[in-house]
Image 1: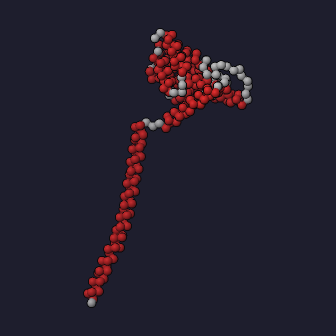
Image 2: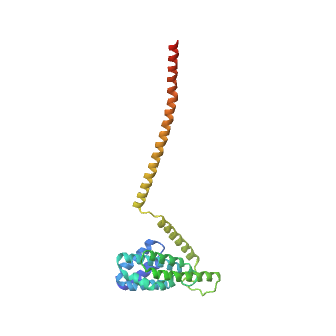
Length: 247
């Protein structure tokens, strides 16, 4: 495939059609790694799409960047990670611009930055600096929402969101939150088996001990009852024998 086709395919078939689906984002990252010899050109495509797309797609591109860095590390291709590190301030400005709609993506940016730090994909000091500036931006965004100032409408969806965009964003956010809960509660199958096995052993042992104590108490009661039922008649027979001897 010639370089021009690779570039256009990356923009139109992958970046411009990104959704909140991890599979969708992973496929786009895999495409970028497949044509890594054009890494600088494909990296530039990210900015071209970010500069013209609506705020929802910008959020999805931010999550895609995390997938791209993660896959690049796994594949041993450091170039994409280095370019993301170099351009992250610019990426943040495009994903979460200083508008009311842009304020919606501040949490997205924070989540991705924290994940990149947790996975040691980007340097922690740089991430902390970006998070600090992001906090300041969030404060300004909240202030601007509380005291609205008229802004020029833009056709790229940065200032305003249509009804369909809002519904799409709500649906994608629900999907992300659902996956986050699933990831939070996910347990490694082998680890889960070991935990259940240990808990089962403890529970079984406790139950067996309790059953043994119950059986012992029941046996003691039966022995006492046997004594009452059988010892007294024997004593009566002895008394009767003594009386008969006296006669």
